[in-house]
Image 1 (spheres, rainbow, N blue to C red):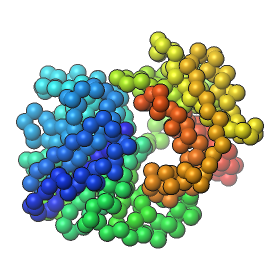
Image 2: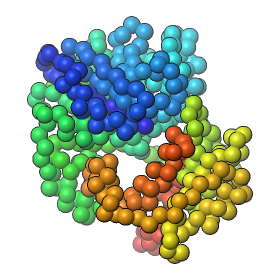
Image 3: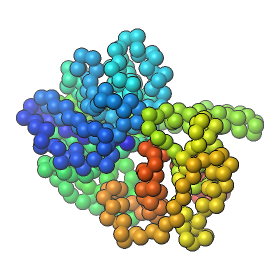
Image 4: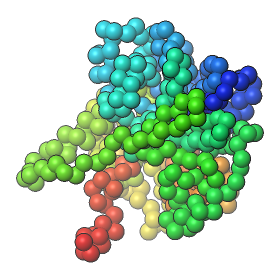
Length: 381
């Protein structure tokens, strides 16, 4: 992941990089490989880069197109960037191998419609120096975060709240309505964050901000349930396997070490199986276990690791919630009540010692009705 930051003033002002160094440094953990700023008459953009594709200096951000009109800061991965690049190379001169530059040139040609062509997880901002328009967008399911605040003088955005709150001009007030929703749902729904007037951009939405202070927010994608498929069970099996296999394959494009979080459940086990069939060397897999047998599932993860010959790593933890609570609060930022945050923290700590990118089975239960509550819904519908 990378960290992005920016501030747009609605009137010309004297912008100094040093005034925003502290804001960007709050995102150091997101991007340890490179730091960059871009300053124009009304705007400053900042980036903390975690290099995944093209580890060279040519991937430096903020990045511009050939004539310097468009500038981008980007967090995420565009999985179909190689396919998109083929269609752009005839009309653009690329200086890097990054998906960032593909996205930049795609916007240069398609404008807002570039979002229709993207497969991936992303949060990005593009500044049009000529038209003085700032464009921000977030991926379809909201995997990458994008927070923002605005008043009559400026608009500020970042990957995390802490970068925005570091700005001395941003008021820090508790949003009690958001706290009420947290106590109801055990998380803070979009667009609230827990702070008054600081919002998170909803998934599948974009923002357009102009120098007159106008802010336009639009949804660019919705799930379409109108198209129904009449398939046999075997046809469904083939279709789902094909989609899952392709999805895993696209996520294996990387110039840094990658692996998988393996719980031993159906979702992560299937991801590891497809990875093992695509990668020549053993897949690096990582599992967390517990001393309490009723909660420990490492035996299932071990079976999958043995079947696919992975380079398997396990850690048996005795979670100390009091010890790591300050770290969880700092990184989660918003009120959050899912106890899985504890084992996830330990799992990621172990994983980062071996790899940079980790695939997992998150989202499988939501897509394939894996939770018990879905059976309850079916009864009452």
